[in-house]
Length: 328
Image (tube, rainbow, N blue to C red; front, top):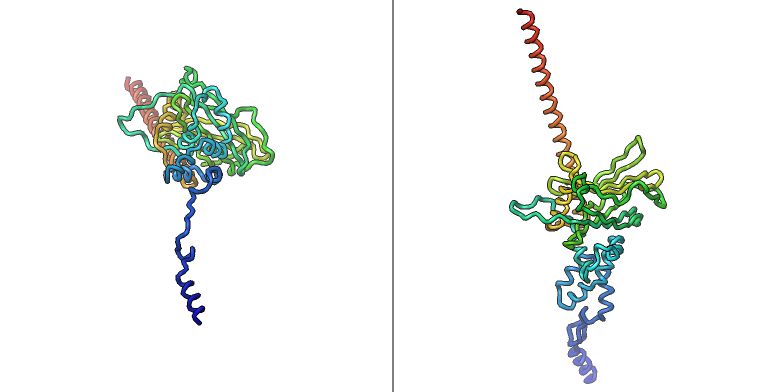
């Protein structure tokens, strides 16, 4: 009986780990650095950046250049060719991290505040273009454009990533399931912006030619960066991938004004990301199209009134001339 009492007393005095006894605690920082690095590479960019603010040890891991390089390559395969491009040489270890911070969120769509100094126009633009269909990359390329020439500045803004030669996909293409990323980089300033809405904001089919145009438009203030993919979805042929800039009336913007819009977007703050930002881009495009249609209707009515007034003045002059001849 005494032995049983001693056993019960010892069990009552025993502090188990589950009950909060004094045991050595293991925290996540105790894991080996290479294991933590592998874990961090499975995070998305926003989570990785937030984790870097948790502690100094996490900051060192979250700023690892290889981690950010892998993250950028997973989103934009064309980035692999940027460091090989002559105008992008000299970028440091923080290149991919800065690129993600600039290109992943959407640029602000509001106009610059009054008195804001306009950024300098880039003399070169590097486009990193990736086209995916149902999650599979079907086109990836880097295009360098000399934007300092008088021809580019005076002509309508246009950059072609694919023109005329086209290519055929392995299977038939559904334009609504295309995703496009068009990164614009300024080598002189190191800034970048994604000029695409990622998912199509409109898909228009021409029944005459059988071609379909999927638009990935981003509205910035009074202009729209119009990235478009022209394809023949019957045969899986992508014919053209281009980027233009339109004003509020649907007309083409000159190269100089288009560069000013791109430079302002690069310098502007970023807003939103993910599906919500993509949906907002589609809504803004719808409002842009409605405004463009309303302005066209207003111009048509105004021109109709002007024509009517001119016709009335002409008729009155003709009647007056006849009256003058009759009264002689």
